[in-house]
Image (cartoon, rainbow, N blue to C red; front, side, top):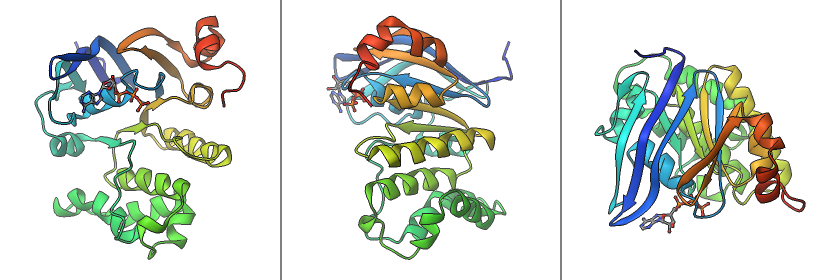
Length: 248
Ligand code: ATP
């Protein structure tokens, strides 16, 4: 029977690129209202995991297993349909339209709602601007001229324009200065309070475990640990591999 508290349930999900196994069959769950993080080093399979959940693996990539979203198996659905159902992914490369304005990038994020005749997309734009006042200030500026932090805000803002129930973030801290990372993570925590559930994959284990409710540790395509984020932050194995001195 479906548990209504479970927003996302990934069951025996595996992924291959051609014949090469990138993710071993794994199980993962996101409950409504939670921030769940998956921490792992370079090449552990974090992006592969999010792309497999979103149905966005690149060519030669394919996955097996079940992805249950709000109780429905969405494996086999295309990305558009998953977005329509309330899933949203902010990819690591952020994939903005560089020559288009900040505002137009945001409007594209809400295009599906607009096309479907859903009222209130203007309100969503106002909400996104309230969340990221800097985007409002720079509304007419070309996205390609934004700073790294502002680009990340725009990528998150664009995903929010589709009003997702689940926001998946692929290394939002990548390449950002510590102060900007703090800002982004504060926003992530704030989003949870507005009812968005979040699946966050990160190399920055310290920041991710600080903000998350639960966490998983991914090593070479396998989930080797899971638990409450506070417990993981105290786990000697996590401390040694991911939280050692010198890491931020
Ligand atoms: P990073 O933090 O460096 O982005 P990651 O944890 O997100 O790493 P993935 O990008 O998911 O890791 O990569 C997992 C494994 O799959 C790596 O061994 C990588 O070389 C391989 N891989 C990723 N994308 C492809 C692809 N398009 N074709 C073939 N192999 C790939």
